[in-house]
Image (tube, rainbow, N blue to C red):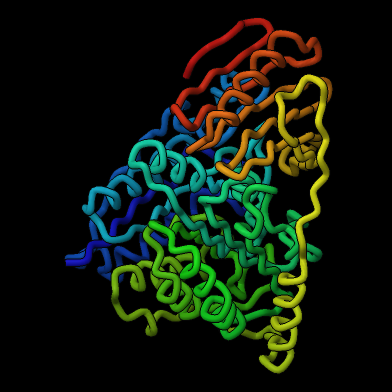
Length: 444
């Protein structure tokens, strides 16, 4: 029998405020709805209990600045959400389930490669931590992440932007009209992973027909060409026509169809803030689609009243968007510094605004061009007045990139007076070293 795993973690003790849209009621109404519908009694549904991720598992994907200890008091709920994703991922790898739905909060897809705090309600990236755990423990090589949240999954994109073995696809409301203001077609990946990032920004008012067209005619062909071993769906539900934070027009039936088209191995909850009017029905439709049951009878109590873009308007938009995407060619700037190991290093400046706490992170990202692997990544990150570094030696690193990573790490943390702390993220050997100017080196 095809089995579908489900895991609830409402995170009762984590809140951004009693009236904040990201609160525990997001999952409580869903639990009640699934219970009332008897879905949890279906023979193919298997429930799991939450589990805590370790800091080691988190640091495989993300650097916590200025050091992990600075976040200790605020990470509990985030580590459980990430650990819950890992737990269902492991169940999928063991063949215990065919697919699964991680209904856990807090969400994570706005949290990137470097973390100074919470942004977009996210501190740890649940999907990225899951993906790198499966790669490290099970040797999975090719994974696709399809983000269907209404907001661009900028944090997930940031983490895997230079990784040719992770295909990242984000379908979202146009960044010119919504946070985080990114996710355009010219964002296609770094120098060693060009065209492994696909952004599909949609105009406000897009409904079921537009989403399903994109899934069937753009997303599926791209997935088939990449041939991933696993597909992870960042399952945001704020595209619904009642969501208070966005302007899209998906329905519960539309969400069920997206899940049926995508056939993800795991769906991991992201956003969605129409707590009573939409979420219980959307989650029900998604779970039924995962379990191979009929979801077409699921109806939300409210009717769609706001205008939905007609197909006659959407079709030329999609055609033009595809042409724009195909026309984008790589343009990278080589910036070799005297202190850098040999090779061509691509410089990509980055600026990240933390909307939850109201501060700016500025970054200089350097990637070693390589024809054999993802390339070593060096990130210099600054939140005034502190500067920290991340050195990433990638999975399947070639000997030259591995040595370049060690050389960068040794030189920077020993000889740079302006650096406060750093992380050596050796994904090749699953080795993580944190350095702090006051406390020295520590392995995780």
